[in-house]
Image (cartoon, rainbow, N blue to C red; front, side, top):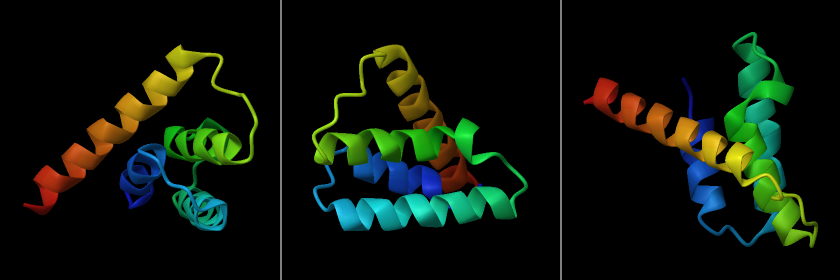
Length: 86
């Protein structure tokens, strides 16, 4: 699947550098596009955007269900990648 899901979880756990988060979002967008996906529907990107919004003082996590779904998806993908890699 790629590294974006693991990155998203690390970032959502409390990343504090908005430049690093923005770079991770850009890399994740490239990864999704290279895989033929849509960036506006990717849970890993959404999770990183939530953290960037928090770092810039925006209040966007009003819908905790969407946040939780994005986090759960990234956790599942990261665990599958770990199992597949041995």
